[in-house]
Length: 458
Image (tube, rainbow, N blue to C red):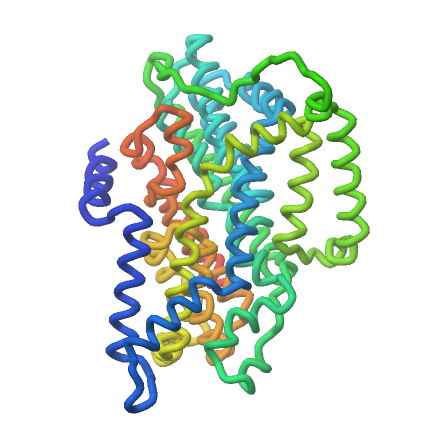
C-alpha cells in the first residue's frame, strides 16, 4: 500500500477541492487574458475580461448542457436504486465463489454497464462492490475488498467510450459545434466546421467498439489475476445507510403516488413518444443527450413501479449533482474569457505548430488526462478544451471525431487517480481512497497503453 499512500498524500498536498480548483483556474484565466489577450488598443481589457466571464457563466446553450449532464447522473443513479436492479445485483453476487471470481464479476459487470450510462455505472459498481463484500462476509469467502472496490470504480475509466460520453453525446446534437465555436472563430471559418459529430463516428465507430471490447476482457482478466492474491479471511465491512422504504397508510390522493398503474401509463407515454420522435436517429446510431435522458426517465419510472418510489429515489440521487450544478457555470465562464480574449486561438496555434496529423491525437490524449486532474467533469472539460482541439484538428486535417475521442479517452483515464468521482463509491463501500488507489493505478496503466495503441491505429 506504500505507493497508494504516497500518491494520495501528494494529491492532498497539491490539489485542493474541485470547487477551489475551478475558482483558481478562473482567476488564472482572467490574468492570462488581461496580460496576453487580443484587445483593441486603448480598450479597458480588465473590464472586457469581466464582461466575457459573466457572459460565459450564463451562456444559455451551455447551461442546458449542464442540466443534461445532471440528468444523466441522477437518472442513472435512480435506475440503480430500483428493486429489479437490486435483484440483478444479488444474482451477480451469488456467483462469487472466491476472490478471483468476485473481482472478475464486479469489474466485468461495471465496465459493461458503463457503456450505457456513466451515472448508472458509478452507483451500480459501488453498490455491487458492497454487496459482494457482504456476500463474502456472510459466507466466509476470503476476498480482497479494496480490490473489489477498485473494480467497482472501473466504469469511470471506460464510460467515455459509451453512449453517455459527455463530449461525444453532446457533440452529436445538431448545431452544437457552431454553438461551441461561435465566439471563437470567424463566421466564414465556422462554416467549414461540421454542425455536429454523429455518434456513428465516435461511440459506434468500429475502432472505439474494438477498444471497449479489449478493455472489457483485459480489465476483467487483470482483476481475476489480482483477485487470486486474496487475504485468508472474509472482509469486515462498516455499517452504511441505504434508501429506506417507509410504510405509511395511504389516504385519498396519496394513493396515486403509489399506484403502479399511474407509473406504467406514464412510462408507456414516454416510450411511445421516444419511438415516434427518435426512431430515425436510432437507426443511424446517432444519439443525443435528450434521447438518452428521455429513455432513462421512462426506464426509471417503470423499474420503480410507482411515482412515489421514483420521487424518493430522485431525492436520494440528486445530491451527487452538486458539483455539476455549481462548477459547470464557472467552466463556461473560463471558456467565455478564452474565446473573447483570443487565448483559444493562441493555444490552438501552438498545437498546430508542434503537431502532425499523427501526433496531435496523442498530444490531445495526454493534455486531456492532465486537465482532468483539475477539471474532473468530462462535460466541463469539453466546454473548456473542446474548442481548442476542434480548431487545431481542423487546421491539421485530423478528423474531429478522432480528436474528440482522444480527449474523451485522456479525460477518463486519469479518473483512476482523481478521487472526485470516487466519493460515492467510498461512502457506499466504507473504503478509503488510499485502499483502492494501488489497484486503480494498475488498471490505469493497462488502460493508458490500450488507448494509445487504439489512437495510433484508429
